[in-house]
Length: 303
Image 1 (cartoon, rainbow, N blue to C red):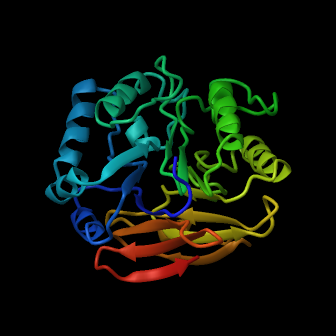
Image 2: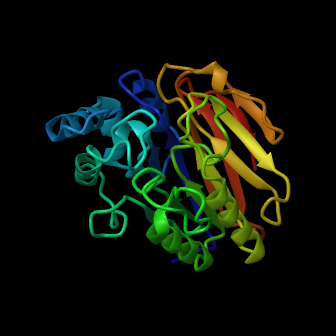
């Protein structure tokens, strides 16, 4: 894989529906090499296989999205709604997740879906200058004790945990993006579908990155219908950037734009997406993240 001399731009979005058409149209202006659908993409909220398939099909048939994905590769993970149930975990959604996984697999052209034997949808995508680790925090969640702490329920499950640790340790991509739908902090709304619920696994993961001196890691979440940027000082031996992009549709939840000591920027508006551009043509590789909206306005940028 060519790592140096590359410029790779990826569009990222979560929480989309039929009010997201102008987002797809605007994305076509950004010369994207890849589109990441980061959960609630689309809203499925059922375990009925016929309905699951129909919702995926109707989503991908939106004309502007169809035009975009004709010339842009698409990868994704799921969050609670495309997993089948609002706030759903591996236990509460047990009766639905086989069919929601089947629909996901049928409508996403990945080379890997979880463990390869019907469990989960985690995978990774290597674009040279940047590698995306597409996490599945839903399928295995609450189904067993955590491999990190036997007193806590797992988020990722032991198989995905071992895969993730191995994949990050062995990645030599300049930038490594840990992608999931749910956020890496506490939503502060009483729901349990965030990484604060699974702090043992979250912190063990970040501690491993620090101990092993793995460079170039950033994290990404969606779900909360607000766009945010956090920076956790020296958390992994260097400043850890934590990007949240939501919503791609028109529904905003201002109450989830909560205080956090690491919060640097936020925006409570409809129809947003972001782009990540990894540039390894320079002596020191650069990652530039732009927070965009459907009108083509750049609302925030960090390099």
